[in-house]
Image (cartoon, rainbow, N blue to C red):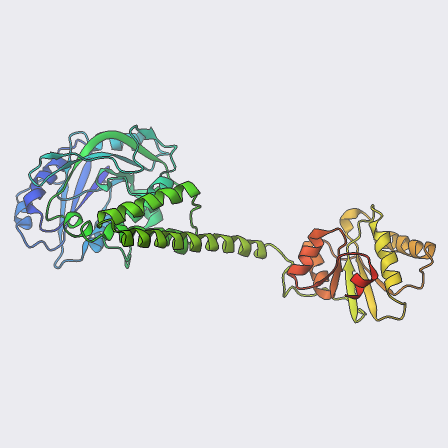
Length: 439
């Protein structure tokens, strides 16, 4: 029978704490399985587990140490429950830890994961003061918070307290390989889980996390500044490498600066360390801004037909110098363009003015042609240089092809057409002075 909850317990040489941890997990009344991934422990872990006769325990002992990430991924693949919790083999689930979290997820299908606060303890189990970190709130909530935006800056979710829907795993996958992180794989994974999903928070301390000399976090990660190094790797991964980077506000950058300065302080707080941290963040911010701007420009180009390389509209008989003009037939400006063109060139000059008929104006080619001829005759300019009326274009893509076919675009008082011509590398006739046509 499929359990409701899968509690995943990676372990390695923690027999001194494992019994207390396992007993606290098995005390839950939630229908569960406790899946243990023994990463080739060299102590009495196998003997300890042999003493348990509980069908909820699923014990897997690896022949060799796979490393923590591979063991995590193995356990994730073994989970069968509707909900999942990854627990620490030296931590303790306090009474009533799992019942409210699973119940909340059962009764609120829009919530994807639920976490709580945690208490600290030392190697002997004595309670330690554990302050809330940046991003944690003093009150509970049931969805409605952009957890990713807050979790992006700093990891404030104790992952041992988290219960989440197994369906989330199908969407984000496991921890993968080659993360390049030394201590913060869980933080990046929590970020992926929280993005675009709803979270619930119970503001009670429901798990005890043990801090002791044998802990990797205490022994090496904090002492060597691994968390600070990982922080920059994670930020770069989201901001510079992720295909869909988040949008970061100035307030977020200020909070990120507080984090990197705090990391520098933890390593001694020298002026050199502070400067290095600030410079690294400033370089990240600049590269991020350039990336976002480039993405916008690329998107504009993809939706903008007025670009170099657009195939030309097949226009026959163009003069050596050719111009395109898009008349608004309801305004008098087109008459001024005709007069200027006809007086700036002689009838024998090898030039062509292409008048592009926009069918959206409701004018037929015969009607437009009659208006042009009448205007030229009335102005005494019937013997004008070459004119070509193009009726077929029906939208921006076709109009762009007309731009591509000519040498310049006539755009007096029309910054839109001038900008389009410039993007395509075409000349612009910005005014109706003879010199503007000849330039």
